Length: 229
Image (cartoon, rainbow, N blue to C red; front, top):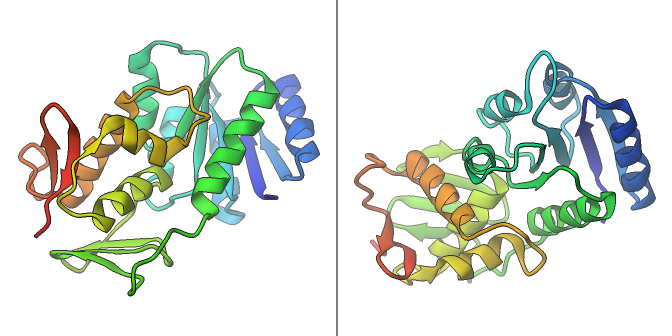
């Protein structure tokens, strides 16, 4: 599964190691060493996936992710030396799709890249019509587009994967573990709280009042469901 991968890493030795390892995996790799250069590169040559270090000069990785998510759904694998759960969830809250904490092995990073690419490039199983409609929410798995009451909604790949699962079976209550498998399969080290962050972000995008959700509902003791009408 070859891809164009952008590595944003301020440590030249680490960046070169990642370049060699990902190129060995068959990917085409570009490297930048600060956040502003990463944003410029993405605007001019959008990659298939971004490996994004948090601690970078000029613009840090968290701000890169925040700016990027205004108009792009490129998958983001965030790399951070901050290992507390709050720090990691902040990265997901800003739109990262997965994260690794330092120190990590290049082999593990390559596995995460494969997982993200497989998830974002795989073709979902479609109903008779390719467009999923739940009330005034429309989700097009082929075009990777979401609209609510006719207005477009930009979703990250992780958010889109969750919303696709909900929209395919409106009214069904999913547990966090079931949803986590939809996001990461079996080769993930993240916790079920990752799902909570993605749901919170989705509510901000599809609910009139995210604090009082009417579409994406909490099923206490189980998980979440999409209201079926």
